[in-house]
Length: 375
Ligand code: SAM
Image (cartoon, rainbow, N blue to C red; front, side, top):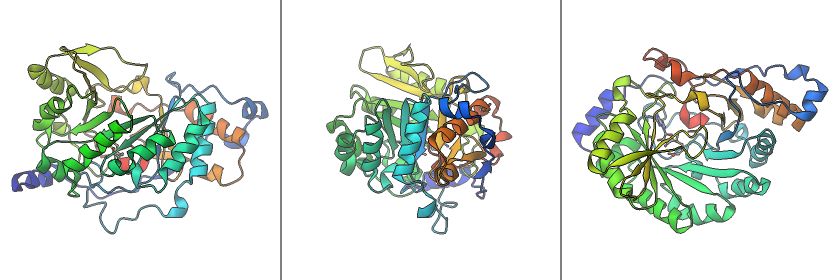
């Protein structure tokens, strides 16, 4: 890493001490379930009329990267206490919840973390979820060990994969992952995933001004024509440790402008209601890119996502500061019908729209870390 970049990372990544925001909210009205409700489930629309359609599941809070914007080494160092094994949901517990969520209209599951490929025998969980049927099953990974696992994941029933890659520039990438992983390990993972039959592969690049934004166009050029879709993500104020400032955000509109100047683009329609990425295609027909503008163009109004943490807390927003303890229900002989009703109640009272109300001041609020809640 160049000294200039190193000092820039130090200057911009003002790290604040971690606060434990893993607070538990009481489950709304679970003790007073009416029998009829428990039998039939509940209409899952929240207070803003949004249905529950997606569940993101964090299968581990551990990661082999220390991305400066997500798990800064100063906080997630050798003394950081990750969850003990006993706190982590088992595959059976996760699969049970997936079945229950599916019965309530969830059609898409994303496995994430931490780094999901660090969870031992993950392919077994994938097989269990695939056996439920009727679900789109996807995974987000940093790609560092994907080359070894791609075929296994595919044959277990994983349908789609997203790989995070913040730059093709070796020194920029190593500085951002802060764990000395080379670009080549991630590119090898992407190639292996393509060979295993994943298509299209999405490649997520978080863009931070002054750190990797000068490599945005290189990334587009590299994957143009490959069939893979690069998606540029605005740097967000998730958690409380990444020292987020509005000045660090490169608006998606600027990213589109920069790429368009060299490789002309035109907008295209979303694939489905609530798609987070805004789609653009190359005018010469050689593929598409996406931009995820959660800071400059909040998409809370169409957010149909719930998030399950590694230890079974349910969060109704990426920027939440407290969750609902589903693990306790799983481990206390609660029936599926009662869990259905609890989830329905949680969703019915949901009013989250953090990205619409974000300011520099809200960025400092106690929020759950992304590695814990799942990206
Ligand atoms: N370890 C996996 C990975 O690297 O893809 C999955 C978890 S990671 C938390 C999921 C995604 O969240 C990654 O694409 C990562 O770059 C993104 N991410 C993490 N912190 C972010 C932030 N502050 N702003 C925007 N995206 C962020």
